[in-house]
Amino acid sequence: MTGRHRGAGTTLGPRAAVGVAAVAAANRASRRLGRGSGTVAGGRIGLVLDPGLLGELGRSRRVALVTGTNGKTTTTRLLSAAVSPNGDVATNDTGANMPAGHLAALVARPDAPNAVLEVDEVYLGTVVEAVWPRVVVLLNLSRDQLDRTNEVRMLAARWRESLGRPPAGPVAPSVVANADDPLVVWAASGAVGPCTWVGAGQVWRQDAVGCPACGGRIRFGPGSAWACDSCGLERPPCAAWLEDGSLVRPDGSRLPVRLSIPGRFNQANAIMAAVAAPLLLADSADGASTPGVPTVEEALDRMALVDDVAGRFAVLDRHGAGVRLALAKNPAGWTAIFDLLEEERMTADGPAEGACHLVLSVNARVADGADTSWLWDVPFERLAGLPAVVATGERHRDLAVRLRYAGVEHVAVADPLAAVDAALARRGSTGGAGSARPVVSPTDARWPAVTVVANYTAFTALRSRW
Image 1 (cartoon, rainbow, N blue to C red):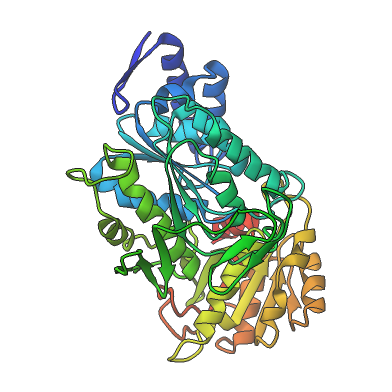
Image 2: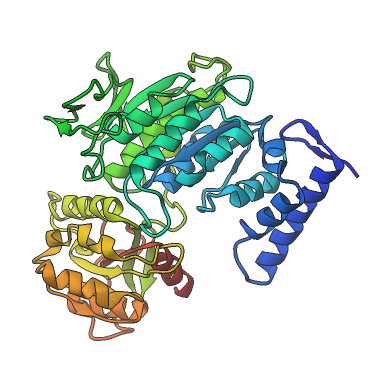
């Protein structure tokens, strides 16, 4: 039996065709039985039947890979939106970011000429070798899942080695890299293919104080400047950077970054995606103008309509009040969310309710990492003085201890939905569960009554119960 993978323009051999059929059937069964979203199970079966299937389905498409500790899912979603008017896109923007998830995404969109794939940091080299990407987007590196993920400088070394090898495909991929992260710069500076530097910012510097090149000390200067005090590693000149909500280029031109999802960190993700979009679609490796290929400005305009990324920042109704959900899975992610909340509290037309009334939820399952010592690296002290903070989740006691030492007044409620109700009650807009009265529309993402900040499995578990 043979099959035709029309989007990639390749004729599949018998083994690959059986693998594709098995992936599709297993994922349909997984969804029908309620055992998952159908993004992993079939992919695992397909890779057992044909270990080379990922490459066979990916190599003749235009592929972009997006990796980093934080922002992968959002950047993948934004980049997909930027290129989708130029053809169907196969993507795993729900977060299944290992090879089984990549395979499932490609099988689900057999006719798609383009693919935008989020990649777990550990698997970047494996996927680069398999699918021959046109573009690799490197966002950042910081500590994450301490019991599973390698030390960050080891990850940077693996990226550098992978991108520095002679290309497995006809050309080396173009790299779009965050110039504000020293670990990313060192990794990307060894790439064989062309590299475009983007000043996307770095809210978490604690993992980048040691120079990955020589072991010296990275000194952070005014603005975004940084350099090693012992070798030549330093922030490279950028082709674009984020400044006051605009993408700025060396010629002084400015493009406003207008998004439907909040936060400077999402604007940073957007400019990385905007720079990558023309590189993915253009015929030339430098992204030079090609008929029909979006400019950076057009890519930003296309991203403006994205208002939901796998439930992140969704505002849901709870007894008539708006409850916003935010994902933060490690110290860098929590710090970025705290930046957003602080920005909202200081808004010119009054403090945002949801920035002041918080539910914090932490689990420690396999997908989160069993080691919760990272809680002591999160600057919870920034929440001191807020009127309503509720600790919840399977590790709410660990979280409550950390909040106590941070000087944050809080209550601990084991059940997450009960914790949301407790936050609404402390807010003073309700006489009890079921009688909350909204200050604003529950669909207004800027003015929710309560914000829930949760790590990965806590976030998905709460969404499933809504």
